[in-house]
Structure formats: C-alpha cells, structure tokens
Amino acid sequence: MSEPEEYWFCVKHHRVETKDNLCPSRHRLGPYPSAAEAERALEKTQERNEAWDNDPDWNDDADAAPGDAGSGD
Picture 1: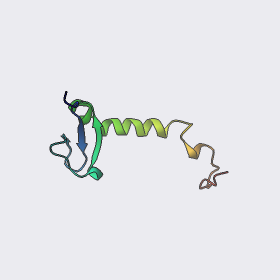
Picture 2: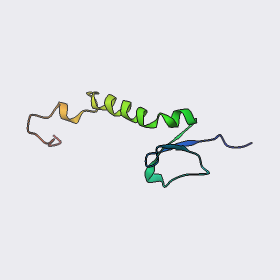
Picture 3: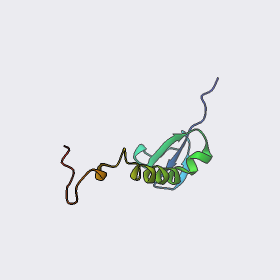
C-alpha cells in the first residue's frame, strides 16, 4: 500500500510541489492533502492571520495600556 500523496506550496515560486520536486523547507507551506488545498495556502494563511489578529484570546495588545509594550504582568 502506498502512502497518500502530499502537496506543498512554494512561496518563492508560487507553485504547488510534491515530494518529487520540493524547494527547501524555508520556502514551503504544508503539507496539504490535495493540490487544491496547497493552491489556497496563501489565502488560508491570510484568513488565519486575520482570525488570530481579531481573536481576543490571542490578542496581547487588548490588555495593554496605550504606550505599554506589554510588560507581561
């Protein structure tokens, strides 16, 4: 039985890659279970960043006073 195919998105070349043609890991997002999901890597990353930026549980700046760099109290 063969392993399921995995796909990565190369942020340097803006293309989907497989294990047969991978750029260095510093240029890749993934793995993803399908080429279609890998193609959406940058879009998905942006969606997650926006969600985290707007999530009060993950927003360290929400509790900081103006001018406070986050004292860690």
